Amino acid sequence: MPENDPWDVAGAVRAVTRAGRVGHGASAAVGVLRALPVVRTAEVVTHAPPWTGDVVVPLEAGGAVVVTAAPDPRLTAFVEAVAAAVDAAAFPISGIALRDAIIAEMPTIVCLFGPDGLLRWSNLTRWPDGTPLRYGESRMDAVAALVHPEDQTELAALMADLHTDDPGGAVRYTARVRNESGGWAVMDVIFLDRVDDPVINGLVAFARDVTDLHDAEYHLRATATRLKTLVNALEVGVVLQDADRRLLLVNQAAVGLLGLAGEPGELTGLTSPELIARRVRPAEDYVELDALAARCLADGVPVHGAEVQFGDLVVEVDFVPMRLEELRLGQMWVLRDVTDQVELEKALLRRNEELSRLSALKTEFVATVSHELRTPLTALTSLTPMLVSGRDGDGRLVAEAVERNVLRMATLVETLLFLAGVESHSLELAVADADVDGLVRSQVGRLDEHASALSVGLTVDAPTPGTVLRGDPSLLTRMVHHVVSAAIGTSPPSGRVSVRSCATRTSWTVEVTDDVPLTVEAGRLFTTVPRGHRSPDPLVGSGLGLALARAIAERHGGAVYLNPSPHGGTTVRVELPLPGLP
Image 1 (spheres, rainbow, N blue to C red):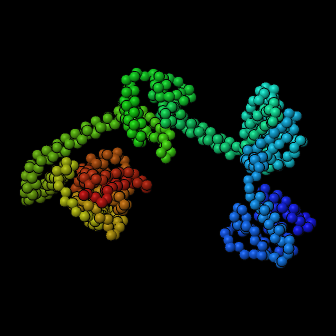
Image 2: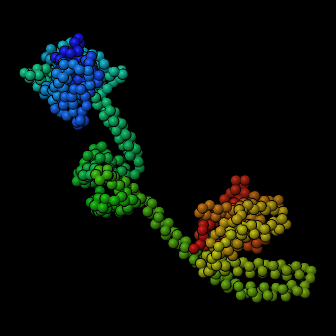
Image 3: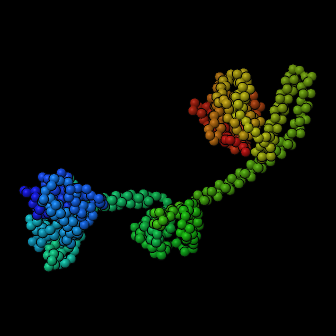
């Protein structure tokens, strides 16, 4: 804007032109026009005509300068001159000015030092620490003082010796430079020796702030070191390859398992053929492993737990392809020596097969013996009442004892036959929906009178409505009866037996707990109960009651467990899966 006379046309044009160099020509034009005493409004519009005003001058780039004002003979010429200045400012600036403007906006610092070490030119106005930049005064050694003390000596030597050591050459250095906040920024600096260049005649320095990149690289290296340490500590073998099968990482476990010559560090970077050359085991040992690797690479899908014979070892292999969207980055192999595990599995399988055979023989033997005993016992049970009848005194007591034991033996034989049928699955189940919690309450109610007669406290905790389980209600009732009566029969006077049933989403459980410590191995309780015979169940004392309960539970897909209770007694826990049998 003209400083004195607002009607100074030359001053107005110069003001608009100067402002136009930095993109503010239109706003400067409005300012000089509004400074005129006769002007009421002035604006530079960009829309298409019509335009309304006392003086309207179209612009070559589109739009117009529009003024409303009181009449004045000088106004039209003044507005046309201002509009011409706006048009001129809209044209591209000179190449040199454009270059300087672009360089000034560059994120890279550019400095030119003369042969005398003085600053001749830069795209900065202040140094990174905020101190003013002065041409002809700032020196290279003063700039080096901005650098971290640990970097100063080497950087100053590079700057001073570049022209002597490598005329026309270049050198690169990463230095820490103080910033305005008082901290340190990491700068990537390149020095070009152009002292002998007739145009430049000096040392050119380019610097770019790479602090974020430096921090990212540091964190990346730290993460890679942690991962490498973790992988090396693993007992399983880990091999990491890039998409060209070049080795990126291998731990000591993999080197030892694969039989490779060398340490993990010296193997890193080798190609697949180079790794093959490092193998020390016989070539035939690698046949299955190489075939699996070829299939995995061809299919490109994850593989878990593939077993291959590797010489005298069995190796389990996991293959994990690594991708970033559609870009294949490489693959990871995880190797485990499962030789001992496989041998144990084979031994366990043989043991299970043998146990199954022995169990079948036992069931067959029990059924055969029980069947052979049934006929003479049937005759005895029909004769013993005649033996008792007509006797008195000691003779009658002896006869009654014989009758009781014959009946007990007959019951045992029938139970043995029944047990054999349950275990061999020859006994057909009458499957129906059963309220198992209701069965528990019913059996506890039936046994409560006998428990009271033995001075044994009997309590039950079973939810209502009860849990519905698909199974054979008769067998399930018998299972609960045998478990509860065994606890009553082995409890001393004033003992306590608690029965609790509950259900989760997947299973139903009944627990029977007494006060008697578990003094024998849990497995023996299924063959003998060495704590007396006071139970309402005639099978207590033989162990067949719990054995039958276990067989019924297993027939329903469940199991029976015996454990010490928290208060020093014994807990028999029966677990059956829900919803039960199909």
